Length: 472
Image 1 (tube, rainbow, N blue to C red):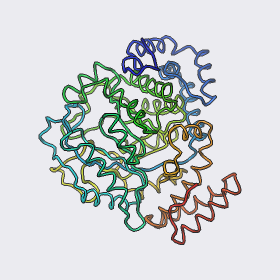
Image 2 (cartoon, rainbow, N blue to C red):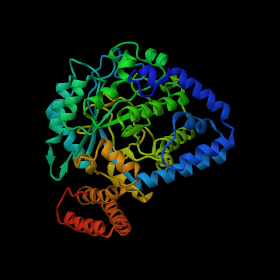
Image 3 (cartoon, one colour):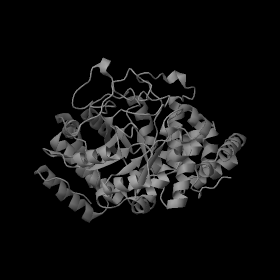
Image 4 (cartoon, one colour):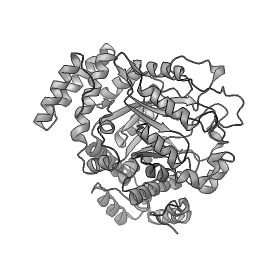
């Protein structure tokens, strides 16, 4: 039976409930009076459950879709403003014992170059990222208890936090590693990680088992229940995601919303982020082998409905997506993007040769960080490198309380301007600096609180004189 308060995966991600939800959505996809009621509830900015949101996803009425897009834009503005947070992934090791059919790291792949970074190599990677201007990283590693034990991850986190090169510093490390134990999650908490990220890949259990035929990841229940263990281990912020293209997208959409509802019901805090990756080409992987691919238009609709259904969560679009697609979905609720990403192990400090490929997937957006910052500002967004909430202890329920009350902008907007100013002073090209300076002046003027506006102005002047790391 479906029970969002249960700690059993089969209860809170209940197959029969998802099937019934999809049948209900199909039956009501043209029920415009019901859809108007659902949209009216969505306008209250309190989100939608998986069943109501699935009705909107099933609906193909052009006016309804347009209304969903408008509402998603409004909610994004209310909760996150025009800020876009930037980060980069850092791949530590591609050794992996799993047999995942969609990932080139799978243990049977003899073509991929296996690499595990030493701490000195990690230092080189981080310095290269700092020289770009990055302040946030998401570290990634394959699942291999012998090659990538928790001790290696912890040592790497400590190394990264202690690298200070010129004006560079990594101020937040998010962690994307395999499901593990409560004890290991406690260790990650003690290491002061930001968000613990784990993609479900697919919530369809039978498909999950087929896609993960061997290795520890084959255990669907252990994987799906990982976020509960992470939160029990003291981690405040967790990030969900499915890999669109592996299973029916409507099934996955309902599943990720049910997971968010479960976390909220049990822990009082929903997901800090929901990522939106799609299957992409990679060594030994052909996306055409998976028949669940979705069009760009459907992808945009999914992004808009995630924003409507879970208004408080951050939404992440990576460099898996092209500039064109990212430009399409940015207004629909996206709050974080990666920039100048390398998905290979050791890809930042030196470019690897094609025949020595160690990448997890092909990158579609290959622009430099400066080009992405420049592009975002030309579109009217504030590129943000802010880590203030995490470092000020505004995480978990404390962040959610501010975010759900739409008060987080009182901190985030000026903090975004301060971190952008740092980037402009230390890393930007002349054109980017010019555009950024104009943007900061415009955005500073619209800060409603006079005291905050004056303090931000003072901080900006101090940053121009060489000061760093100010925050509200």
